[in-house]
Length: 142
Image 1 (cartoon, helix red, strand yellow):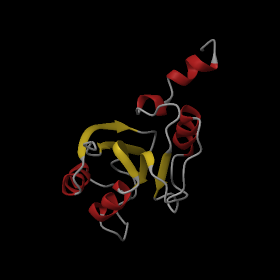
Image 2 (cartoon, rainbow, N blue to C red):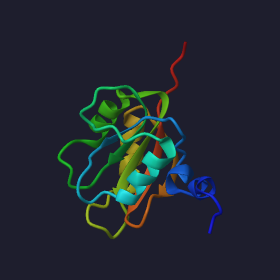
Image 3 (cartoon, rainbow, N blue to C red):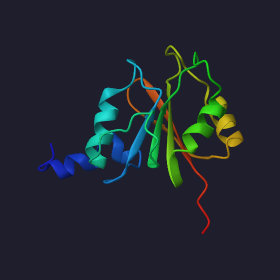
């Protein structure tokens, strides 16, 4: 056990996924199957509540919960999400793990990301039932 909350926080899933204090994170595709522990971990690390997908603010990062039965096209959704994320920000696409309902093959996420102009930096386990694909937005040139 850790001696302090600060030490415990450094081992959180949100920390391992690269979230930082002060970041504003917008969430897309929320439903009753999302990983509440991951959501709470991100809010704890950032010190900010997750922003709803209907908010039109520019944010530092985005979570996109994506399942195989979504009606929209993943590329189109990524382009929309990209419009909310500040240049250089991160989009974490969360899909059900293999063998779970709604699983999306990693190559589908990679193809949609490339078409949307995003770069994949890593694939991560994001809890018991979800896998994450970390995408980065193009940096804004000044």
